[in-house]
Length: 295
Ligand SMILES: O=C(O)CCC(=O)C(=O)O
Image (cartoon, rainbow, N blue to C red):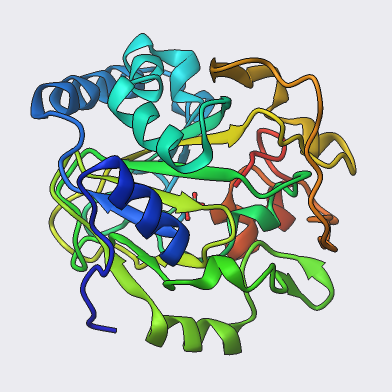
């Protein structure tokens, strides 16, 4: 795959049009350098702890480099503010409308040389809801490109429904390997300089390669949903993020909007703490760590 981003946008109309056409949109340098610098300082503060495993999941390859920081908005006002940044929320609003809620967030560290790959998947497979007006904003804290494992997306894939994320009949949070090969060919790179924001539809097929470069690719991922989209309850995992959900714009929903569809449920025999664990199968060894993180 050597294709460039097909969908960069600057104003609200572009953002809406490109997002709904391709299932994602890249908004170059939406967040200013000062805000990004402050987020990186804060990130180091979060990691300066004696008990790293309470805060972060570590790379399996070296057992020491953090690959995911859990719940950054609960650990830091800086990340809480970034999740509520007017520029980000304006972009989200231009896509899913003015009644929107914060869903959950995380930090992916993609450390230089050791950053794990994320295999092809659709986020909705991890958290089926009553409708599909859910999206994630990936806010790059470093310049992100093909070399350090920027996001890759299959354009238009959000229109094709939900495909299987099972291996041997069990949810594993990634598409079967035969499909992955096809998506690798059809996918495009969605990178950009630090401060770039990628809005990603919950049904868009996406992945990112391992980081073999000398540069980290740190990213704050903050997810939103239309306030009338509620999770489909199939067990405790489905409710895991709900305590943190809050209305950010518009009115709390008094009705739920239900669109038709048949959604396979992400039921597993072992609890998992992250998409990394369930995709690599390490959740079978430790039964999950912090219970059932969203993706
Ligand atoms: O950080 C990345 O490269 C992608 C993350 C992702 O796909 C996810 O969290 O669903």
